[in-house]
Amino acid sequence: MSSSQLESKGFFSGLFDFGFTSFITLRFLKVIYTVLVALILLAGLVFFIAAVSQGGARVVVGIVVVPIVTLLYLVIARVYMELVALFFRIGENTSIMARALSNGSTPAAGYQQPPTGYGGGSDPFAGPPTSGA
Image (cartoon, rainbow, N blue to C red; front, side, top):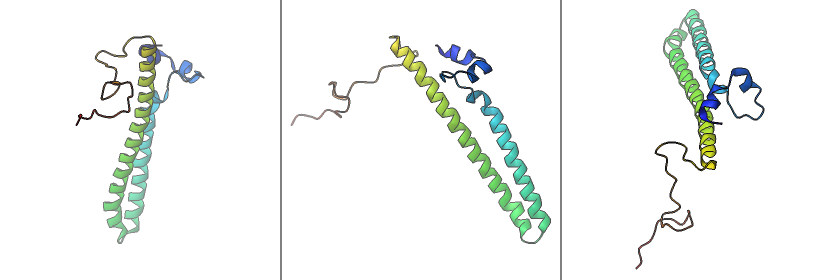
């Protein structure tokens, strides 16, 4: 199955793909992130209003700390969503490369097989060649 076939699967065919050959998570990542951002901003607004309405020193907390914490949570949510996308893209690209290599072709233009070892021997873990002294 080529990369275009992986992407062209519909929602329901991807949902009921019990072999997990296609992923639907990447399609919903934008929606999940939008919901997370909305919830974080809503919680920040609630904490801000609660802190300011109580008066005293809590006004300073509401004005200074709540926006900083809200921003921190937004950054953390973004990083987590990027990690999820990264793992799924790594999985997709690995399966594409494995299929291409099993067919005897290179997976992409410009892709080169890694060298077998530093010294050109058969052991890939042999390390760099040493000079003969």
